[in-house]
Image 1 (cartoon, helix red, strand yellow):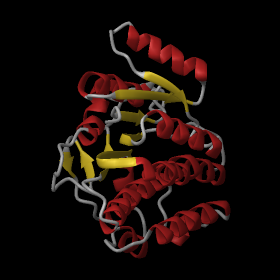
Image 2 (image 1 turned 90 degrees about the vertical axis):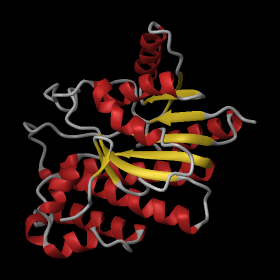
Image 3 (image 1 turned 90 degrees about the horizontal axis):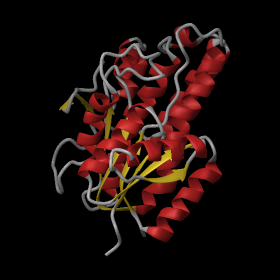
Image 4 (image 1 turned 60 degrees about the horizontal axis):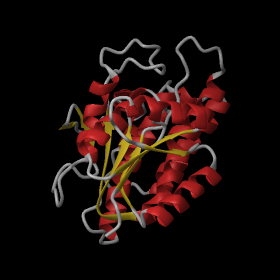
Length: 276
């Protein structure tokens, strides 16, 4: 039987690093720490080695499709599958950023939504029975949803929304941001929040699609790690990275054949109803 393996994207620092640390302590298999930058990734592995934890390193830049394909080939060759996928990699512009909103919308949705979806499309064929997928979202997705028009609220909370429809709406948001008409069009004024609306709804659709295919106990959930002190939050969060890792790791280690949570949004290890 092949050795079990967990993969955490964007995990050389911050919440991703905390998730790797916790999985090294609690998961019965190899844990892959990934980073765009090889030096930063190997340094992160060395730091955990000092704690007597033993993650493996593999380069991964989710914005580079070839990099995603390479890690897929590596998993296939070395493990024959994948047991845990934590999609943690993401970006956010600082509040003080002077970048135009059009740029923020384009860049943020590209990484956080479209390229996270691409990672899933490449790696999902490797998921073994009882695999767990955790898409790290944010409570800002709930806030952004609440600021959308009634029409978009209804579409984002429609239990039958398809992936094509979702990607189309996120593209409409990006285009509206380019035209500076996103507010009139009915979208929230937060590029990060809208990208995470995409991640949350994507997770719900993925669970439906996997169930439809008859996949054996593969569970996907979106989650909010909480407000964590990281570079992304300019160290302003009230949680440590290890506290921020708790809910994603809870989702990653859900026991076999669980009825719930499946295809839901989790905050503080509890289901948060996705509604406007």
